[in-house]
Image (cartoon, rainbow, N blue to C red; front, side, top):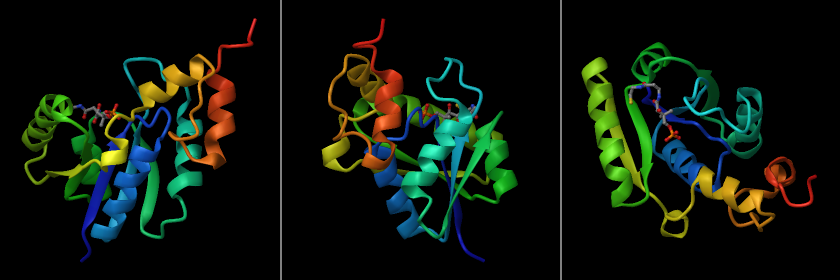
Length: 164
Ligand code: PNS
């Protein structure tokens, strides 16, 4: 039986950094479930259908990648999907504390669930969905942050310059 892993996140919106991690996971494992967290504490800028749509357009061509929305605990979603590991990207030491806490919590909730960290590609260590939102909200250039096929939709939604 092949190895299934889950790449979870808010993906609000997906960035080149996420795409890099998902693509590398797809090269390492047999099946990759991209789990898009529905019920974020903070109201997302893009609703669940939009976030899933951006992922479909950017990683949907990878044959062993599936994109699903999930609500509730990641540990339960992983079990339901048959995933034996969570894959997360680590950008900097500042990511570590939160990621370590999450990995240990998930292991406690589902002892069969491992967490695998992939070192972020050096060119994306600064990049996050928050950076995309912040730069775009001031009308800044986000072409280096998100692929062309989703760029305009993201930029037009977030750019506050010129509105009102
Ligand atoms: O992209 P993000 O926002 O860093 O992703 C965080 C996410 C969605 C992976 C994390 O918040 C999560 O798994 N939430 C589901 C709720 C859960 O399982 N909580 C317990 C572990 S912290």
